[in-house]
Figure 1 (cartoon, rainbow, N blue to C red):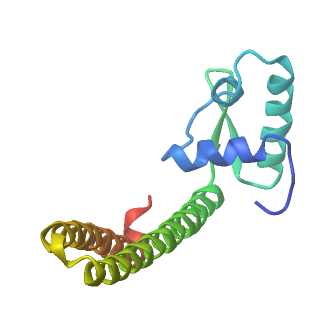
Figure 2 (figure 1 turned 30 degrees about the vertical axis):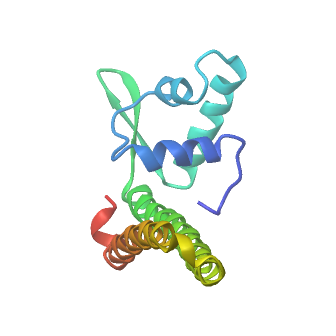
Figure 3 (figure 1 turned 180 degrees about the vertical axis):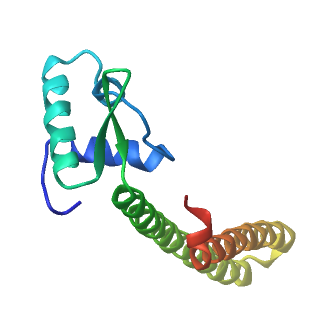
Length: 159
């Protein structure tokens, strides 16, 4: 959808991301999802739909003398690509966050080990605390493995 820019393009992309299929809809459905109380959104929705038809993302057809719109194969392919890309970016960002959390927790364990050597009279408390941090690290590593697996199989996870 790089062919055009439109003020409602990002809003439409959110609809595309969350709707498995846009079939037999009226423009009203789109503006109601964006902002049902805005007259300007209604007019912008018509211009957006006109552009989407022009670039062959939507088709017009008539049923009982009523003008309806449906997505084309071009939009379906775009949806697949867009959703996979967005999912991958989101999951990779989460992986980075998890890795940072693990590094912070490992550094915390090292710091506790240093303190533990200086104050050995409460080893039991330190050991329990380290044990809790290690359990937390294991949970984070499990989440990382799940995310890595999802990224590997992303084609099967999106539409």
